[in-house]
Length: 192
Figure: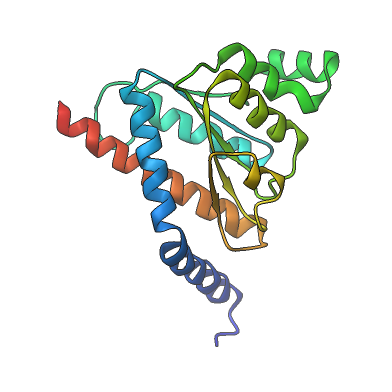
């Protein structure tokens, strides 16, 4: 075993990639199908997360709306983490635990898919968003870790990365997100 910290951290990352490949490949395929079904039915993706997971949500929404690898048609995807006026008004007037649920209430419709990014699966703001999506008739998926937390039981599809490390979980969440996006990209590119 190497004593070099860089090599050790890369090895930790690589070992987790192997576990995710062995344990979550089927669920990643399910997420690809859910995203494709959403777009094919005329629905949209809504992405949400807090902190670093908010950045991942924004990143992935942009990949669908603008482009990933191919110049295929724009796909409807919205990050609920980007409008500072909505976020600050919601936090001030309703409490932060309601800022995403309120947006989901306004934007989500039957046939849409809410994709939640959370390393703990415990934030009330994200649980509220999942509950609001269910009330709107939208499906829900979550990229989680640390056992999945409360969100694991509140979503239609939970992908729980087998780690307690926030950093490693976020690395896997963006990797999974890119894999899903690439497979969706290929499907739409073949239609052009």
